[in-house]
Length: 270
Image 1: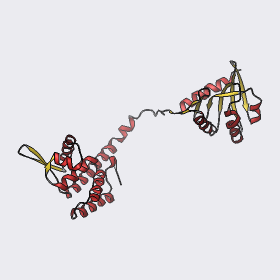
Image 2: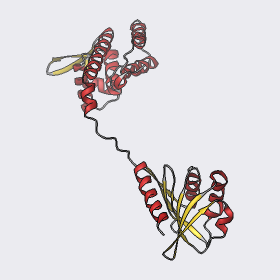
Image 3: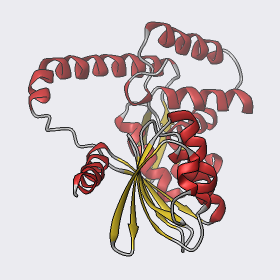
Image 4: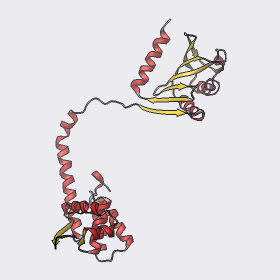
């Protein structure tokens, strides 16, 4: 099991690491076993490159960084910084001979000490967070819902958004006059009315607003041909450009409420 930042922290998981390493200490490392160890080292907090460098150094013994880089398939300059990081973690030792730096991996059993140190450090961090949690909570500002916006482009995409629209349990529609009834009113809206029974519609007909409380599809046929502009649902707003085969779906309670408020004001206007 992984704890914070992907480190192994539970006693059961820690025991698994110990048992795997102890079994490998007495065996020659095959390629398969080497990669198994790399995965375990990543679990205890090393990066993939650090894991490779440590395992290769362990396998080939004391060597310059260039040799370790070659066997680990790492860039030479990158390998130096990786080895420095492993030195800081206490997993690599270094010494200099004839002005050449040599690096040696510590014995595998010291990895267990590294895991224990990591566990103690995480426990310390947890206690520190617990101690300052009330102070951190007091700094929390008001939650702001970030709008989720989806775009729909093309005829097929518009068919998808019509299916999303008729999922809304309540619906307010802005529409305008058109040469022919738009397919939304011919197909999607009748399906909606069969399920939810009614919808409020405001029609912009040559700058005159007509208000219709529609309860069945026959009432749609009695209206002049129209096309949708905005559909305001319970949780979403859908803005549609039928001429361009383009639509936008907005999911945000504040924005939905603003659109609904504007619709209700227009609805109440005589």
